[in-house]
Length: 401
Image (cartoon, rainbow, N blue to C red; front, side, top):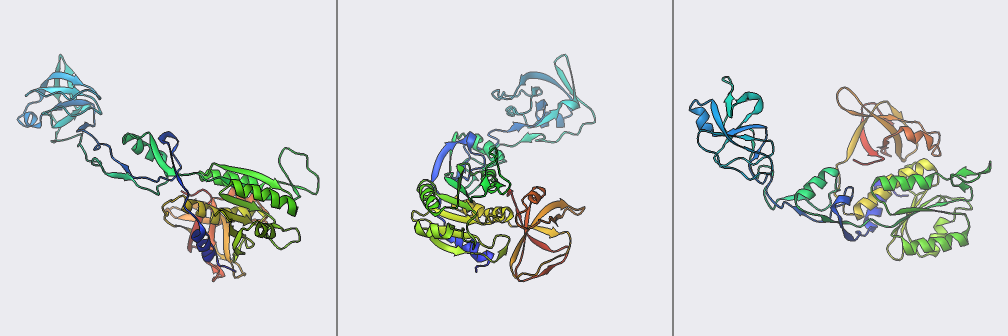
């Protein structure tokens, strides 16, 4: 049985990088960038005024002049004027610095009457004050964003500032999430006492979409070998990623491993030394499709989806590896099985700014309701059975930062 580390390595070794596509920059937030975004111009592209007030020559002020005739007014977007000796120009925030001016006096430090601006006698004016120098943020041609960056709303500002209306990103893969089982009934349909509501599939779809994989649809197939074989063959033809929930353990109706074998899906591994999610299965379709068969228990399914599926999709999208995140255990934890333990936790912060992980007890791996109170799960190594309060351990948030 593979360790969790070896299982993740095996998954990442099998992935193929997704193709790219060009999309509108306005729709790019959340997508993985696949190009260099270079500065169209230096930023700021001119000496930018940072305060409302007056622009003047520091030499005039240093010679003792405190009253300045107002030559003109210049607003943001106006072409820079040329300052006359001994005068000032009334200026607005964001305007380009007038020629021959080299400092700004804020409006709070002046009095204006009859076209004359008078600086307060006790104001200490410094040369180049309140001027944002041209190119001080970055120079023209600078690489502002590089491939592998997940585009944030803040990055949209950069892309727009570079004059780009479109960007190249990793394609959003076609994903099929498939719930299996006779006992499952979708919300909105009549249900019998011996049946259960279908929750894994909708939750997995939502988890994937929260990570910006939007081309994700859900299907339900009963535990019938012929039906499974026919329907899964269709999904394998249509999708790049298949995620199954249920039918992967050791029961007599757990047909998934056999059906996948019949469909020429190569098994890479089956079972991982972890709790929850030990029965997890991973393979490769004949056309290179990634196929994940997750356990049917809700906690197991969601943990495996976050731990392996999201990691695989991120890598196939060319995303840069983020920094590993740690949390400090809030109380002692002990467990006996020699397995890696993925323990759901709620996160809080202490007065020192540490992120504390508070274990949230689940009533077996079928207790999906308890997960609502959690922010993610911590990873407790299999070669250790006791973890003391204050120990720093790997943290995996449901929604990665």
